Length: 222
Image (cartoon, rainbow, N blue to C red; front, side, top):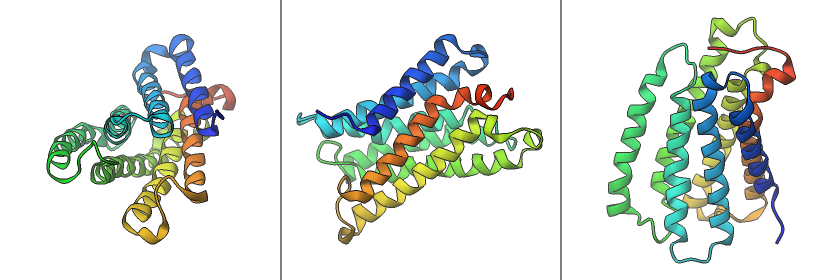
């Protein structure tokens, strides 16, 4: 059984973030964000394993729980920890609460988590993540505290850039394949392979992002 680049990127990201969590500098200051990144990567690996290899009748439930519910939840928690200058992170947790509350009626009245991917919950949760990634990326570029700092040395610059790009293109692809049948099925074709490739790059970048100051020779702090 061949191991895809997507899985390899997730494994490397898990090892890298786990190593930083165990031995990295500034551990106390960045422990929470590194822990969230590690959980995001583990969730991604489990989701991919269930999507590809599970033959259980409960596979859709497990996939929805991990990919549709837990992944955006962890992403939003991560964005609530990032250093905005506009203090928008105070609104992330209420946004997360709205998402979790809406998941219940979506699952009961609109789309069962047992029979397929819950597209409504996916669009809602991942749309929230995409919104905050756009806001944070814009805010990061405008913060005066970073005007004299090499942005490539900031872990959060790499996080925001890759999450914005990967979530953006996968979000558009999901909409096209689920609601415009002529585009084909989600999970099929060469376009999906590119979507997974950029998703793998995002996960790999998340795992390696805290090593950016070592590579670009700049310190970073809140």
